[in-house]
Image (cartoon, rainbow, N blue to C red; front, side, top):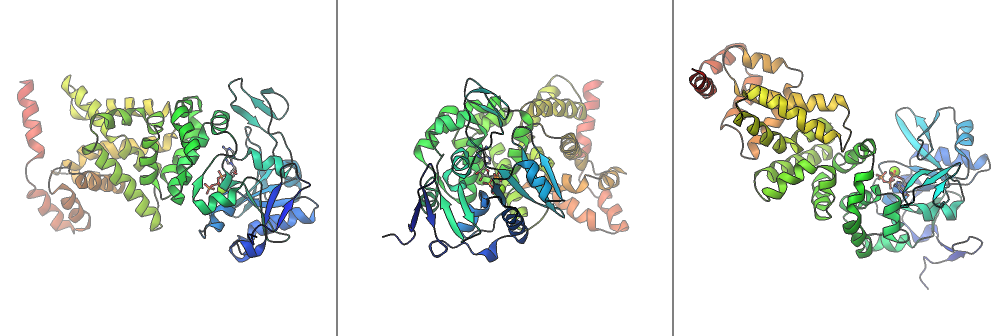
Length: 439
Ligand code: ATP
Ligand code: MG
């Protein structure tokens, strides 16, 4: 007999396989102390409590979990009563956040599936989409309402076993993302799960089960129904978690990228393999490298890179109609950003920074008089300079410009003045041309 299959819990509605401590690699020493504290406190208050979700999944794969989620029989209000440092959040999905300094343990009450219509805790549209998911249940109903089998494994702190209702262990071993139940149904319930499938596959190096994948190809269009605010959160997880390059390729392959970034998809369609794709992929790889090295990343930079090509095209159009360069850029930036936030609500503090990165690009090309000093003093200079590097690597910018700025930043006063004096006069040709055109 498979040594892992030691017991079947038969009192539960859906027989669960219980994998004992000897049958898996999770050691209590790898579990966050604060998650353990939450589990023990809930238990000693008489509630059921398990570690579940990404934490268990990642530990089973020998990876370091990003965060720890707890599932419990305690209601959100009961969780709050137990922890001083607790806040209840979310309307669609009510959840307790237990804070330890800046870290948070998410505590979710066991859920139950619910039928179409709306009642106290749940709301489901006629098309099957879940609008509110606050009908509480027990652990076996909770397992079935989770998205993927690998995300529905419960770690039991009492005997260190893993409880598996959905053959998740098998999929962990096979490296497979598979929905719990009929994938078409599950993606109709919540189309964001399609993005999650792609994200987990990219992050874990898993394949997507053929039936699950088929449903993604069929239903990608449903993402249009998801509020732009929820998509911003997902985008951050897709592109700012260290697996942006793979996520991008997979989103494109599965026909989901265009649902999120229609303007970029239109450009990519025309120039596959050419310039924009290269800048984009470089930006994503660069972001992944920075995250890998523990350096900070901002969505603003990413959006600047992603939307650069749509911006340039629109700008060229405006210039073709006679607008001056900076005017054309400003106008194009307005349009490109407002079209994008209709799909993904990027907070204003980021879109403002994206815009600054863009408008600093032509300013970096002006290397006469006081211009370079003003650009250098701009609060977004560093991001704009990094962006210039990206353009250079993608083969776009004036030869030597990036290197010039690299030296200028670190040079002393005298050297800076000399650098400005000896700059090749490329910046002024445009002005001359414009003057001629208007005379
Ligand atoms: P990550 O490593 O990104 O934290 P995760 O699997 O823990 O991955 P969370 O968003 O933290 O993802 O969610 C925790 C768990 O809650 C998931 O593992 C899954 O069981 C369940 N879950 C989250 N979002 C959904 C969803 N949209 N539909 C169904 N179940 C979900
Ligand atoms: Mg998690």
